[in-house]
Amino acid sequence: MTTTTAADSTFDVISPATGRVVAVHPLGSARDVDDAVARARDAADWWTSLGFDERAHRLDAWRGIIARRATELADLVHMEMGKPRADAMLEIAMALEHLAWAAKNAGKVLRRRTVRSSALTLNQSASVEYLPLGVVGVIGPWNYPIFTPLGSLSFALAAGNTVVYKPSEYTPGVGVWLVEAFTEAVPEHPVLQVVTGDGSTGAALCRSGVNKIGFTGSTSTGKKVMAVCAETLTPVLMECGGKDALIVNSDADLDSAADAAVWGGLSNAGQTCLGVERVYVHDSIFDQFLDRIVAHASRIRAGSDTDAHIGPITMPSQVGVVRRHINDAIDKGGRVVLGGPDAVEGQFVQPTILVDVPENSVAVTEETFGPTLIVSRVRNMDEAVERANSSRYGLGLSVFSRRHGEDIARRIRTGAVSVNSYVLYAAVPGLPLGGVDDSGFGRVHGPDGLKEFTFPRAMTRQRFPSVLPLTTFRRTRWVDSLVRFLITLLHGRN
Image 1 (cartoon, one colour):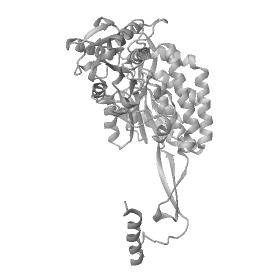
Image 2: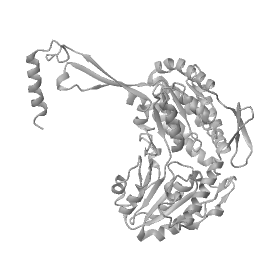
Image 3: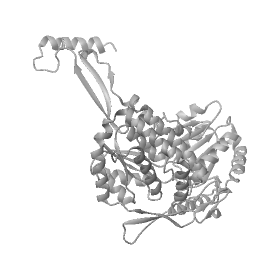
Image 4: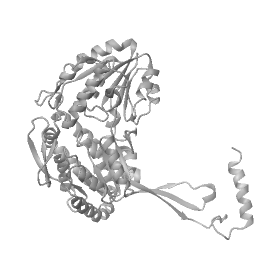
C-alpha cells in the first residue's frame, strides 16, 4: 500500500498487514527516468562488449549475493506486501534457478549460428545471430516482486542489454534491494538501475526512448502501457492477468488434485496471475473432491502472525473486488461451502469456496485475485473444455487425469499447462512462460525469454560468384530460361 506526500516528491510504503509506514521512496519524475535511460545508454556498449561468458560471471556473482542474503530479502517482501516469509523464500529459490539458467545458456541460444543456403543461393554462406536491443525498461508487479521481474531483468541482462527497472509502488524496496545487490556485483557502470514511483513514473519510462518495455501486471494496466508505448512504436512484452482453470477428470488422483486446487487458489492470498480461480470437476467424483478441498482449505488461515498460512490482500482496492465477486456469485444462485462475505475482514480474506455459481457471474468471468475458489460440476470433459475455453484469458491450466490429461490439455487455448500438478511449468527454467488473448503476449524464461530481448540479424557472405547471376540487370535470357526450368524441377512435382 502506498500514499503520496503533499510535496509529491516522495511516497510512503504502508504495510498491508499493520497499516504502518515501513519506508519512504522517491517519486520518480520524467526527468529522473530520462536521466537513468541516458546513463543506461552510455553503459550499454561496455556491457555488450563483455560477451556472454563475462556477463555470466557477473550474473552469477549477483545470484550469490541474493542467495547469501535471502533471509533479509524475504523479510523485506513480507514487510512490504505481507507474504509469509517461507513463501517469499520459495519465490527467491525459483527466481535464482531462472537467473542461473539465463546466465549459463545465453551464449548457446543467442550466438551466431550457420544456416543452410537454398538451391538458388549455394554460393552464399548464411548465418543468424541475436543481438541485444540496447536499453530495456521493466515495469514489475508487487505480488511476486522477485520471481516475476527477474524473469525479465535477468534474461534482458544476459542477452546483453542494460536495464532501467520501475518496481511496483507497493514493493519498491524489493526493487531497490535487487539493484543494489547487482551494483555490488557490477560496480563499474550503471548496467541495472531502479527508478521508484507510481503509474506516472511507469508512463515516463514508456516514453523515454527505451528499446523495449517488459511489463507484468493487470490486463487493464497493460492496455494503458501499450497505448503509451504506441506513441513511439516502443515494442512491449505483456505478462497480464489470468483466470486459470483446474480440471479434474473421473480418473484423477483426488488427493493430489485437491491439494493442487487449494494451493493454487489460496497461496499468496490468491494474488497470483497463474492462480487457480475456476475448478471444473467430473460429476461422478464431484462430491468426493469437494469434501477434500473444503477439509483442506478449512485448515488455511489468513493473518499477520507467524502461524498464518497466507497474508493480507496487498492492494486496498482489491478487497472491494473480492467482496463484489463473492456477493455477485451468491446473488446469482451460488452457494457458499466455506467462508463467504464474512470472510472479508479488513485487509485479510479467509479462504472462500463457492459452488453452483453461474458461468456469467463476475466471479467466473473476471480475475478475482483473492483466496477464493469457484468449484463447478461438469457432465464430462467436453463440457470442462468448453467452459475452460470460455474465458477471455489464456495464461495457465492444470489438468488432473491419470489417462487423458494431455489429450484434455491440448484442447484448451492457454500458454502453459501442468498435467497432474500445478504451475510447475513456471519452475522449469528452460520452458517459456506467457499467455494468449487478454493474458498478454511474448514470453519470459527459456530460449524464447532470451530472444525476447534481442533482435535477429541475418547475414550472407558470398563465397564464390554464382553461376546463375539472378539479382542483376546483366541477367541473360539463358539464365531466365534456366530459372523457369529449376522452378519446375524443384517445386513443380508437389
